[in-house]
Length: 289
Image (cartoon, rainbow, N blue to C red):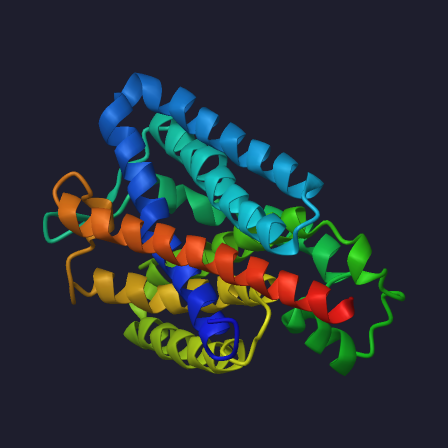
């Protein structure tokens, strides 16, 4: 389990199982706390994310810092970002998008594409950051011959905050892309756009997965698995919209057994990743001695 391809598969599994759990948490907050108390509960969830981030920045263990950063990103996105859209969609009385008598897009997701300007304005900071290790950004740096400066030492990077921001921004970006593709007044009127998005995401995530299973160290594998899984999740979202299967994570109160198994699987692979990475660190220390 401490060698390729198992390291990459384990990292992929951690991020993959977290995706439906993130959806489940949002639904359960609304279901359990109701209209009046869901916003304080969501605020508290975001605070837990901030606490995880604080602990992660103080951790000298790269694997733990990466995991805490990932969890922090998920909690902050769900608690503070998504529920802020939920609140203002309700405050502005935005109606959901209904097709054939069913809600296909909730009000908060109709509002979310309006943040596209903020996204591109703030992502410039990361694009021109000399310390970025993002392969996507660095591809543009190379081919556009952009000299953004000499990067700092890897040891000086705050892995936890980098992972949290990676999680938030990649999630945000693909939410916007999918919602624009679904929008009937924009790309939604062209079925080819949705099909193209599906196949591009499938092929792209497959390519990234092939690269991922070459990793032999858990922490960078998890960071690489985040965009790999989120891009793959586009295909899951589209298939769900096409009614290919029941999205059990949006009805966890009904599919209790299935979601419980996903949570157990997530805990299992996370514990296994921590155990295997700790073993690897001990082996490296013994070799160095």
